[in-house]
Image (cartoon, rainbow, N blue to C red):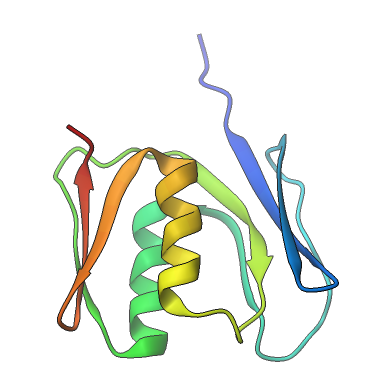
Amino acid sequence: MKKQSLSILVLTIFSCILIMAAPTGAHLKNGNVGDFDFEKKELKEIILELGRWHGYDAEFPKNLSKRTYTGSFRRTRSLREMLHFFEILSGYKIVVIGKKIIVMPRK
């Protein structure tokens, strides 16, 4: 049986963020320069890219989920705010210590 991916759409409307589940392949095309857009990316790819934007390294568990996400954040959102959304969506604990983002399983 083939695993079905679920994409998450993160929409910014009047400074509010809405998070919606959508079939894989759905995506946002808002064309705003400086937005953080991601399409069918695994959590590891997203965290690494966010870390590069902000000058952070990242550490992940060996058995990190391969679930993919699709969506967009305004670049004006703080790193901690974006990480918090992925913590809620992914089920992993995501902490920042110094200049390192650490993703770990919840206990």
